[in-house]
Image (cartoon, rainbow, N blue to C red; front, top):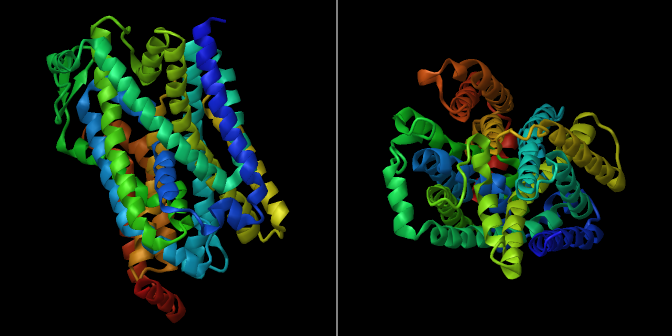
Length: 509
């Protein structure tokens, strides 16, 4: 093994050992399910903000977004990022405080639990449907993270893709099973810092290697449609293609997904003091703006590095390894640079791990708490509940590895489908639950089921028709869900007096 490879691997291994150590430390603090799932509702504003955003961005930030910008230019990536920024800010502004207060009042510790308690669903039908939706859509989301890990080690060291993916998955599972929510949030805070460092180091090195900022922008300007906000660059033909207003709306619709993301909503429910959410919102919003802008710029810089001969042209899903390739070039400078490259690669792992751990934890709570105990009424003590949650994490891990076994799978594509699933199933239902007093159980059930089903129907039956139908499935799913929430609620009896008084009490508080 060369000195350079040794330094890279040492940096990555050191980082992973720190994550496992955090999991072990917090394993001794989980006395019950509230501790394991919500950290006892004692999370501070900074940890809440950075944990939410790190778990949100995933490998999409360091691999998917730069890859899209590298191949097709600014337009597609930028409109998606704008939707993400708007969705992040609106979610923190409108949903965070109300959900923290409402969930605490009802004693809800998971998102499905909140829906059932909100409507006094004694049969826990909403609980079960929401839990199933979480498991269904979190498995492919988790698979995208595992795929990113496999691509990272395969492209850098030539390690077998499958083995790299399995080992990475086991490490993520290890600290999540041990430490629960507190470990996940603490590691997410560290991972967000590592991700930020990785982005800026790569940009600085990439611009220098490409011949300076002027050379980077000159190359981008020479590619048809590359810097346009209403056209995309076609790398295969060297031409540009129009990006219609409808497609722009479709891309910005990514922001609607935030209102239904269980792993982000859980952060709102777990914060110690709702008054500190203002600080959390500011930190989270600024971080998202900076990191998404830098991630897109990395794609532009990478294309200029290809022009300068520093990198070979990356086609298809290989474009998502652009940051990995740049880190590989940095490592060639010397041992210290190799350690820096190792930290950058750890940043990619951080992006992946910070989302995968949160997703597995949310899936675990859905099965153990919402399906087994609330819906099926299987009696469990605290230890049995934690054991069921940990077994669920293992099961999600195995299914995720199976789904990501193809090394040609696109991280961006997998994430976009799962994102649409949560936004379609939960987004409109969550907003109506928090802000509409007349909203009832029947409306919530129709909105949740209709939105989730529309994601599959639009993705596999409608969108392939092309043309005006080629819209990101989240937008029609959200609109269908919202329409069903309103129409069905108005056609069925209003909620009883107790439910309405709870709503008024939360609103007044």
